Image (tube, rainbow, N blue to C red; front, side, top):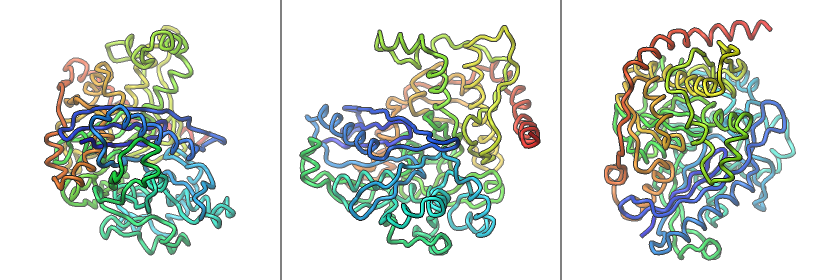
Length: 500
């Protein structure tokens, strides 16, 4: 028996097939470009994304033919949506999380509706990343698309529709739209009315692990799948990744290194607290049924490493093409082992938690003619890790203490990078046998639905620790001092940048 999990990310998608014991049988990946037609815009060609999803499903299923796929789940990037007409045609590109075009709308609309009112219903605080504000931008700036759109689908539902299903959106993904009431698990009528959006234009919400339908016979034949493959509601990629890392109890959190750098702990009940609201730390459904989660994140994460690769690492890219090596491994191979004298504010995109600032730019302080390329690279990575430490300390003060992190995503495969994070956070980080936890979490939900097993019980079997990376006491002490300096950098930059 095989269970397929697909993880639809911002710069690429992966599909993994697992057997009933959680062993990875096959993994396929396709990359697609992030488009920026105007300053502050970040889009994906939705047709290209869905085609990439079909390609990885076909490849992964074909490479695991000895264990035919019985069910599949979908982990999906949050917030991005695509307007679809009655004929199923896509009317515009998908606007992804880092798209900031709705920044002014988010401020003004939230002021009128009430930020506290929004938080009490959705568990989230306003930011231009959320679907709500992107929809308002579309309504006001592309009225012809708004009026032609029969549905507004996130990538989870787009793929379900392409597989021949009547789409449903998972509760964790619906939570990221800021249109969804995380207490009642329904689309919030007050918000929909304020937007002028009929509920019928959105997919019905479903709990993670709910069977949505079966892949249509013709599509199954096209993808090399057997007939009758169940498709289950998956979730937002971060809580799906947390489930795939075995994060279902307090004091443990997922640390994901992807396009977005993200920490995701689990808790038993929804928490609505002033200190979390003030730090823009949300409460919404976990992909583990009956659990809730928050996400502390930097929208500048692995995309910063990709930017460095594309702009400053032609030699490594050439070597990777010649040898088949991973260009990121080649870059990180020569990373200095000691902390740098540089300080980086990693806002190369709009910031994430705790500030939700779409205006203040990134900065590198302390450059000299003696500064090396490797030191700049390490400093960039230190800056992102410092931002995550800032969030972790806020969670600590809110009573959500994290004693152990579990590393997932592409960056989790590199021990140099994992050690750097452990040193900055001054907390241990466990590496896992399967780092593609988004795929594993989605596949685990599929297996649970097919076998009627508990997702939490399956996670205890499927998720296997590989090593524990402990912080180095010497480097951790240096970073404790640097963190004091780091905390003062954002207020200083905000004040000076707004004077320009």
